[in-house]
Image (cartoon, rainbow, N blue to C red; front, top):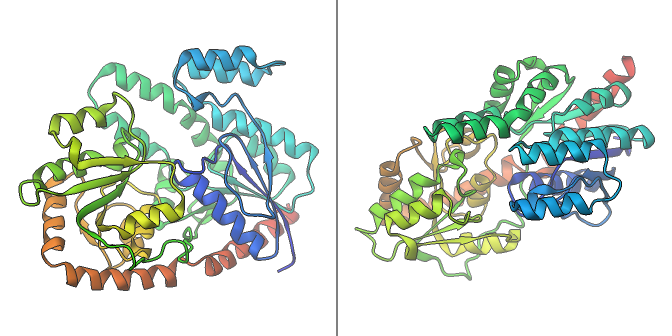
Amino acid sequence: MKKLKIAILSYRSAKFGGGQGVYIKDISKALINSGHEVDVISGPPYPDLVDGIRLIKLPGLNLFESFSFKDRLKKFINKSNKSIDEYYEFISVFLGGFPEPKTFGKRANNYLKENNDYDIVIDNQSISYGLLDIQKRLPLIEIIHHPITFDFKHELESSKKIKYKISRHRWYSFLKMQKKVAPKLNQIITPSKSSQKGISEEFMCDYKNIKVINNGLDASEFIPMPEIERKKNRLITTASADVPLKGLDYSLMAIKALKKDFKDIELIIVGKIKKNGHTERLIKDLNINKSVSFRSELTKKEIAKLYASSSIAIVSSLYEGFGYPVIEAMSCEVPLIATNVSSIPELVGSYASLIEPKSYDEIYKAVKQILLNYDEYERIAVGGRQHIINTFNWSKITTQYEDIITKTIKEHEKC
């Protein structure tokens, strides 16, 4: 394939928070390793990129750097030559909205009007109005990891409080834009068949315009570390605290039950706890403060070391478009317990203990079963790593991306 100039758009690309920053780093690295020229055009927070990839910063107000109104107001006041979009951002955030996908899409469109020498544009999940204008001028591929409508539904189900429900409707108001834009996009890539079905149904997209290509994993980064001793009763999970979709409550309740059988049981949560939030209150109510700890802003190597020191990984999500923690744990040869939902069965094959969601009792039973028969599950975990190496390697996945890129460029030229 000839060398292409590729623009990757990302409205936010946090190095450590969630999968978006991980995906941007990995896909840009894979494409540059395949011989292409890659620019990442991102809003803040900005990604960690490998050498050779140019980062083009399109800053907005970055109001979610802090949740303090005083800090946000100070940012807004101190910004000189404020644009209409920045006024819109501040007012929307003040009223409880999330305007970043929309305003980033406008900034990206304006940038690409002046810098239109790219062979292909790949957007990471903004699904914004600006893309429709970009698509008229340049070949465009949209990456949708999963429809955020699922997050919205699970959050509404998590509380009966009217004030909370109103706040969720306000926050997810950007979905109106995404539902209008998604059906008009010519080419969508998603990482699982589960997400393909969800995008088609939730966003009313033409099924044949949605191509499934798994996300990849560098199995040389997430590796077994036999030199690190596993702590027999240490469990590990990855979860954004207070995000209902991750099902963290059920893991915490399982820890409470497991303490009766394993007094020194502990759970490490890769994520950040929200001060005075739901999760902090639940940990206190369950009286498991000494058994639970949070670790955040970790490098891949640091996460791999935590897996190496843990005996079991738990993914208790209620939905996953593509669960990075699932394949990371498997790549590190850690026995895995995961919910039998959405994309997870696709990812794990026969190499994990699948349980029903929303059940702390099933987590409890699965953990007990593994700890009492550890050698057997350790052998399964070794096979799980080989499954990851065979299925989610970036070399194979990059070729699949290149096929779709070629097809998208040719179809754009026809139009």
